Image: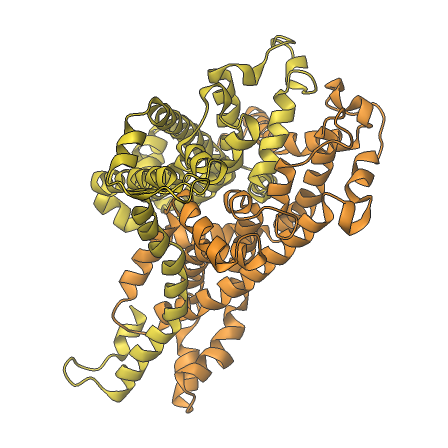
Length: 306
Length: 280
């Protein structure tokens, strides 16, 4: 680390080192306070709310109820259905994104021509508001006004949002469309760090393009792949905008974030809603823990800013 | 090298597929927005007749009547203010992390990473309750504060990556010449860091511009409702017309400038999106 060269020997902390430390803390303090104020404090507050009966519509009733809210949520079918939906959407969309993102990254990396065109076009979904993209796909698949049902091989009267799994298909497609660019760019960044000499050497040894991909590209890209997967998995787990616009949770397509929103904002049941919030937070912790546990050392290598 | 015509054709197909996939929703929205209201439901991908009625309906009635002008002002204003504050705070922190030696650095980076993974829905309830009692519900600061917080990790990581690339010697030279660490920061590093700061600002702006969850949870009127939230509440001109045309027109208005901007600065955006994530 560059800065380390400046430090004086331990023990005799010089004036200069001390002022450098103070400046470091001072410069970081505003950002740290801003981050804690809107995350750590509210999650603590959410825990407090979640063990009380708080319904804004009935301010008189209330008080400490212990884990009643949690048992109410965990014993309801709705929570488990929504958790299944969220995990289903997460797993399917992240898997498709990984394959598609890898394909696009390869096109950008290996293209003989048109690299710029591909990079330009993948940035378009990134620049579009998720809600706008959700509307675009919703209108496209709408049975009356959409163009999809006029395509060959598709029934003219197919009601995409009238059935749970066809609605999932459209939701997942919109999610994949919107977030594959991020995946592709992260994977490309990992791909370009691989030494070209390795490919040349493998070629000389007679390795085919497929062998080179599976024996060189994939193993060396593991850190980049894991970072991209971790970020996209946690991001996909929060899925809210697309579902809210497309089905608002109809046909059993609700995600856990929509459930939390409905309890908190639509029904103003802060106690029950906060229990849902805390449970979502715990799910995210578990997912992050599994990733770090499963791929710990690999993740270290590719962790942002490490 | 086997660079035959066949390979050329294969690449052309691959590139065309990517291009079509990326562009279809945008062309479809533009097409919908240009259809006259009675043809919006005709299901044609390319409009038969072109009309600007949908755009006119967005802006008729001026600032008080239009369902779109106020949300547009809110979106631009809130995203810009959140971006400026976030970038200022993140620049200070990123400078300290990239350049100074102090205990707690790793903890701050780990904390920022944790917040990048934090589910925003978990803060919505408490913020709703806090903002109601603090009088921040349905105000600009009520949205600026969460946007600022949730964009800080992105900004800090991007800026740290950029700041580490800046020639360190120049700053030391300035300090040898008698500049304090603070002067070295403002006089030497800031001009060198400007491109990185600009890149981080684009990413933060797009993040705030894109948000929907906080926008519908913490607002209740045009006083602070942003475009994504307003779109969800759009209604037709009368209760008999579908708002599809107006939503499409509004979507085009908020999408096209950003796409042009993104394409214009694409090198920076790609560098910014990947800088924090993969570089060691």
